[in-house]
Image (cartoon, rainbow, N blue to C red):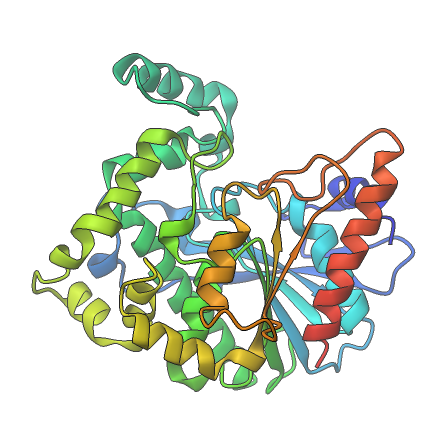
Length: 378
């Protein structure tokens, strides 16, 4: 696949407001399906977030394979602070093409089109950015791209967990619809595997470890730039969150969170007693609930693979290796650490170049996604 050419093609044809999108020269098509999130918002959401309608009612794209009777599905989960599907469209197309699967691009709570349009409007957010820099002289990495998320997490670091919890509940609802034959597009009883990137990988690990309603008994998970416990991530980035937000979130979950959940409430009872809650707690730090995490990951050994990148500074390769290959076994194939012969970052592993480097990007993309397709095809 010519990744660079296909990227520009999808950027031009994708429209989340269309019910169906025809892909020129391909039997694969895109359907934008509707979803309503009816998680217990009164219990789990920040009070200022309950009135954001985009987070409750939204659409999500499904890449439909040529054989619509296929009973194979790949759920694709994105990274933190994404505001558009553009980056992921070729990823989904490649997986659909090479595995003959339906590929669902499902947005994390308050991301992509589950957030107000003005959060990604440079003019609308410029004042917020100026105020933040004026009020906090020591803050670094603040940008138009990350000001909405940075401000929200600084105000309330519990939003990180709340957003994840709502997304888990939404995915459980979606998977139940597929299992029971209630989905409008995907055949009932289809097997669902997961391709997850960055914070989406963190979320997917927790889902498999918690396995709500036994929906993920046989699910395979392929991760790109993900697989580490939270404490080994470094989220300060102009495309993710600024230094103040990262410090606030990091300190809260590493130092304060376990004391917070001792407060009796419906939410904290859930976090402290459910397997999903325990999975989240065990994925905060290598030393936290180690036995639970390692036992669950051992049981998932054949179901999980991860590709880490040498120059990834946000979720470094050693954090992924230390989390998944905790026995330091050289025979453990769960993590492959690789590098690319062109400049890249965690946030943009497959950059666009107007030069011969584009061929190198195309080749790297094919190598990674061929591995993913081989693992997720069954």
